[in-house]
Length: 256
Image (cartoon, rainbow, N blue to C red; front, side, top):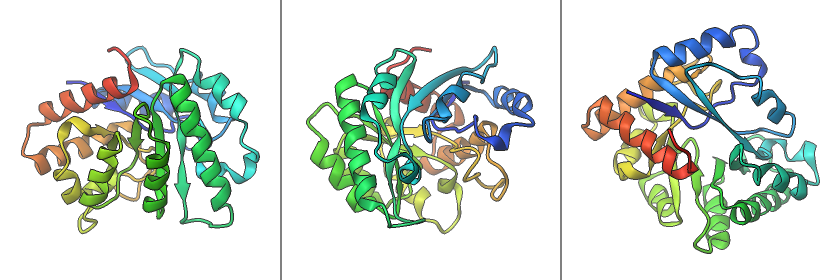
C-alpha cells in the first residue's frame, strides 16, 4: 500500500530537530510521496534539503495569502521562473485567508489572480488555501477558469454544496485532519464527494487528525485520515490508498 501526502510543510522549523525520524515514520506508515507547497520564496531552497531513499518529494512555488503582505508586490516573473521548471509540479500555495486579517484582502485577491495566470501559462495545477473566504475564492476561480485551470482546494472544510461547486470548477478536494473531527461536519460533506476527485494531505505541522489532535502533525499521521475516509465511504483502507494516490499522480502529472 502506498499513500501520497499532497500537502506538507516539512521544511519549517518545527521539524528541524527530528526530520530524519519524521521521514522514517512516514515510510513506516506507507507514505512514500510527499508534496511540498511553498509559503514564500524562502521556503523553496529548504525543500532541497529533504531527502529519504524511500520517499519522493515534489516541489511547488507560490506565496501563501498570509505571506502576501511581506512580499508586496508579488513578483510574477519570479513565480513564473520557478513554476515553469520541470522540478516544480504545481503553483502554490496561494488563495485567500480572512481569518487572521482583512487588511490586505485586495492584495490577496491580486496575488491569487496572478497565481492562476501563471498556472494556466505553465499548464500546472494550482494549490488553494481557503480560510473564511469560500465565496470569494470560488468566484475568482470561476472568473479565471477557461477550461485549462486545474488544482485543489487544500484542507477542504466546506459544505457538500461548496464542495460540489469546487468540483464543477475543475478542482480536486484535499482531505486532511479536519475531516476526522467530530461535529465539524466536514467528514459528512466529504462522504458525498466522488472518490476520484479526492486526495489526501496532512498540512503538517498543522491540523493533526484525531486521535493526534493538538499535537504537531506529520505525514505518518495521514494514515488516520485515510482510515477515517475509508470508514466514511465504506471502503477498505487499501482502496482509499490506491485511488487517492492515483488521483494525486493524475492531478500533478507525476509518475510513480
